[in-house]
Image 1: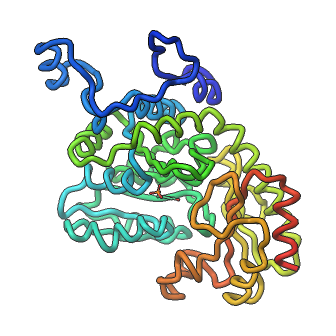
Image 2: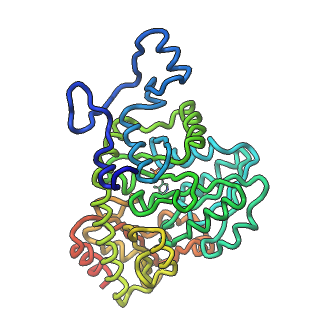
Length: 387
Ligand SMILES: *Cc1c(COP(=O)(O)O)cnc(C)c1O
């Protein structure tokens, strides 16, 4: 990155057209024209870098990718229609039948579903480690292991994994470390610095940050991205130019938005910690967080997700949600609007209680995605529901 984060986020843009537009235009075009037969031949032979067809590349998706690469300190990237298509295409591009993944047990529910229900169709298997026992990782690594996979902070329990330790383990065993950096955003945490080979984002969350569009992106070394690009160019999960244009604009305000999200979240977490009906609060930048020191080492701020446990288990968890007046009950996170969910009765209701507890989801656990409303209003809403 030549300039500071905020400057690159604002000043990285497509070369101006003859109209000298200030803001990047939206290029809604499915294909591009060639000068002559030789230009067409050379373009298809990949002798020059240029747009051919928007399943491969488009100026708006390229601008979005450039920005994320600068923010993450990556050489190259590819942008996807959703976070899940980024996750799936990354695995599908890099793995062969018979390969093995070692993953944190605490991963996004749909990613877990991909590991358990779909990748086994191609004989790709996954072993899981507990986030509290990284020592167990080495015992899980087999000769066929190609990828070490994790998220930090985790969803919904907001646990922190030591990225540097994961990076060292991956290097020692010559496997790829792939980190889903969605909860932290490129502003708060850059896993490549700690040894990650690839970083994935669901841009649907804080990168858009306004609950409008879906998107995903994978960034890393040129060599690995080339594999992911070739797979994606042939299978078609590309981000739409319109969504890329929206997301690229969103990145211009990522730093100021995430700063305020984090400020609000820390205040909400401190309030919850002082409330008598709350048993436990998990927020990475609260001193009481079990991995507070690691969070401080690898994150700039604590993020916008606060998890807490309401006294009285599943019934009180649900009744707390019913008493919420302003915050939304919704499946998304990382929106301007504060969102409250009760994982045990919704997103993780299909797990057994034992499996839920293994990933830190107690019956009374509530997840708050703290938004950008005035923090007093957010706290008052939570307070009246708790009282
Ligand atoms: C939401 C999410 C995804 C999936 O992203 P979509 O854009 O919904 O497909 C992947 N990982 C994490 C951590 C997420 O929160």
